[in-house]
Image (cartoon, rainbow, N blue to C red; front, top):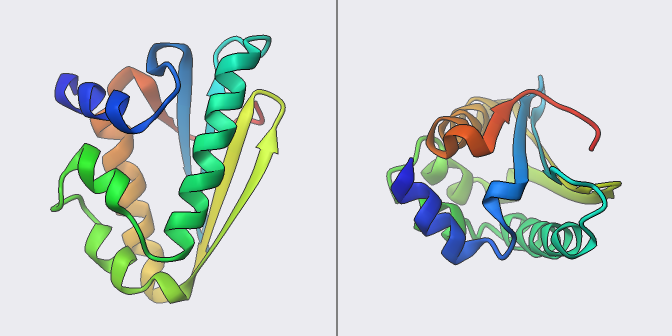
Amino acid sequence: QEDVAERGAEVMPFDLEATTHRFEPTDEGVVQTVVADDPTDAANVALVREHLAAEAERFAGGDYADPAAIHGDDMPGLAELEAGADRIDVTYVETSAGGRITYTADAGLVDALHRWADAQVMDHGDHAESGHADG
C-alpha cells in the first residue's frame, strides 16, 4: 500500500491524504467517486475534478495506463477493460466535493470492472473504500 501511495502521488495531482476514493459495484459496472475530505478545500476539489475528467476521457478510449502505473500491469480486470473499452460507457460528473466516474459495461465486462475496483480498494488502503457516498 505504501508503494501504491507513492506511485499514486505521481499520477494523481491531488493530496491522497486529504481525499477519499469510493468504488461502488453495480449490476451494470462500477461507480467511482473521489471527494476531498474537506469539501471547502477548493484547490483540492478542483484538482480531483480535473484529474477525474481527464481520466474518464482516457478510460473511454481504452487508455488505462494510469491505473497500470499505480497498480501494475497485472492488475485484476485491467487487460479485459483495455481490450473491451468499446463495450464500456464511461461518464464523468462533478459532485459537490469532487467528481464521479460511472462505468457501465456489457454483461461480459461487469466482473472485470468489479475485480478492477476491488483491487483499487485493496491497494489504496485507507485512501479508498467500497461503497458510495454523494460527496
